[in-house]
Image 1 (cartoon, rainbow, N blue to C red):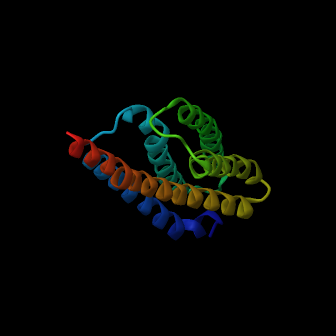
Image 2 (tube, rainbow, N blue to C red):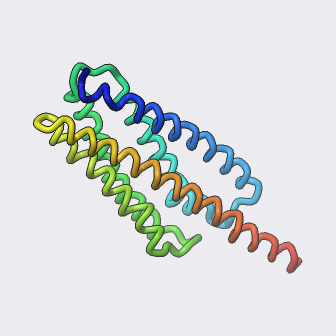
Length: 179
């Protein structure tokens, strides 16, 4: 049994969770669409889209690592490229967060939308380089990165829903009462 094959159950669980959470995000966004906040497009690109990207990355990486590779070499190249792409995407997210004016990001937003995803994607890129000489350790790096992306996505999805339910809804009700 190869080192990669020992991870099957882990990636089945993580990939299934990521896929289910992507579906739930579509349901939530459909429900929120009835009362979109002002400047929702800019804020969505900064806060909602990255959540789907992280869930999608966890889903993709889970599927990638369930492929019956003879060794982790080919998969390492792909997950390394995904890691580099993710680091670049984190810079895009940071720029979008600065440019949008619907919401003033706080420390927690920067941590969960930029810093932690950057760490996860960087871990993917680094573990890709380690995989040739240290396959077992590299696979733990990938597993940690995928799990971090999943938990970041869960946090961000919850944070987004809580904002729309507790803050945006309250503002919407205040506007109705003022009329």
